[in-house]
Image 1: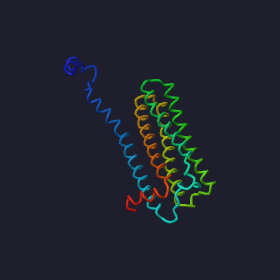
Image 2: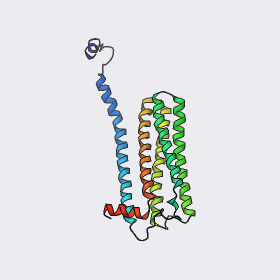
Image 3: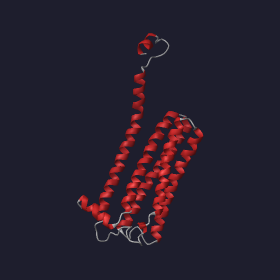
Image 4: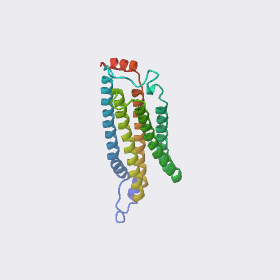
Length: 226
């Protein structure tokens, strides 16, 4: 095909650009956004790892009281957190389906699912705020116990990343509305979907960490050498 294309080429009409060069250029244009997202996710991962290390170290102090284990502790029954987890899971599913339906050019379903993804993400935030309120009114205020402080801190940081994702997604859709560039929208949506899946995995980790009991923290700390 390359040989015949060269024979039939009319350089006086159009400037010939090899297909391989075009594909390489397209890949190079996509690289910065992907690289930036990977770098950002690495930074966020390091941040949560450092918080986890300090949390496990602090859990060995005498004034640390885990939020689950005993019947009267709030996360012995973590049903509200399970509801929030399900909401975030479906938000990620909606984000994944937006990419699928955009590729199929099913615009109505795309609009419906991207709206559902944003609404479910916001609902997750409201669910987390509801958990904070329940903790506060039950006597587990921010400064009452180190475990309380870490719960508010870690879930708050995670919630801020969710809000940032919703704002970034809104910006992506706004840019598409201005420029009507479907390929760019698809590329950006794919990156947003990766971000949503990442935040869901981080939340599962935080869920398991923050709802552990005292015996679990002692075992983990002993294994880690604290």
